[in-house]
Length: 444
Image (cartoon, rainbow, N blue to C red; front, side, top):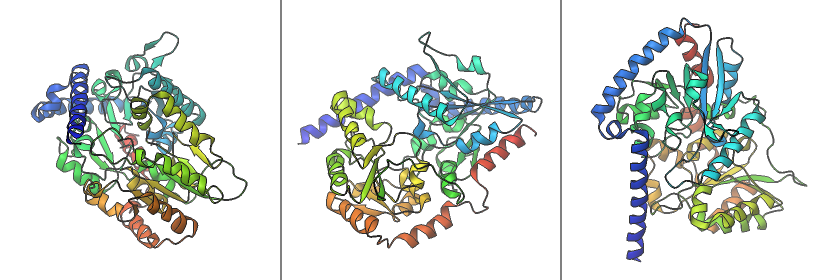
């Protein structure tokens, strides 16, 4: 047993070390990533460029705004995009860029996700361009083609190509709304990367995230603005009418989202997927007359399963959810899914916060007690509003007693937490705040 654990540690460290080295060479960022003093020198130069861009923008009639989008599930900017689109000053454009680009990534799966993302943009009526020229089979020079003034990113990682990362856009105004609300002790990826310090504006959700940025960001949060949870804006709007994205049933049933995390290949992880993947299908079958399920996997999970299970078994598993009479797969935007659901079962970090905006019962499938220790103060407060399950039996009890029978003793706690910490105290929606920041900056 010990030998197996040691081998897994070696495998994990080895893969990540080689991939990190590969990215350091590809992105040419070893010194700014490894030495804070080098990064801070870089930040000072970038701030000067950003100020120069602001002055130039004040002389322009139009402002070209790009949104780099890798996958529909991390798209948080719809409300803002619509405001920019209807404005006389801004010209928004989405760039569909490559996703999950690693040393050993599957190019065909990457292209499949890009096609899926293009379909998403087309169906939503967005103006978009693909970073890949399908006819010429080559990557486009987006900066040269589009000449952006402002760039929004959807992820902070080096899991795309260098031409679509912040390092290539340090002479324009760059902004980022986190694709997930930080509630973990994962401060490195959320605040300490060069990405966050190089941003013109780092747009966070609450005072908690601002506090963490001031402590851990290498530029000490000098670029941080609290705007609220842009991704959850529609959940906060009582007047918003969501599209019913659930599979049609012969009668009304309770609607439960199952959202497993992707960390199936780590020794210490959140994901219970391998423990529950068959149990959840069986529960869906057992409660088919009363409940319908939406399988909402983390977008990286499929990549991980292809490496672990192989393509055939992975596709077969996903297909089983799709073909269930009372089941479906959801791999894109999830706000309408949240709005029209009755409950969620998950083991994802960001959903620990995000689903609380839906103000509905939620269950966290706990792998072990160590998982609780991974949450920071804010995350612990959010987790306390969850029901917890350590087994299939406890998961089924949640389905039977809380969801179906409607016995929800945590309801009042969730509602109070939402009012005190999540809903904007000034009542101003996040997209309005961001739009105002941009409009004021360009002098309009």
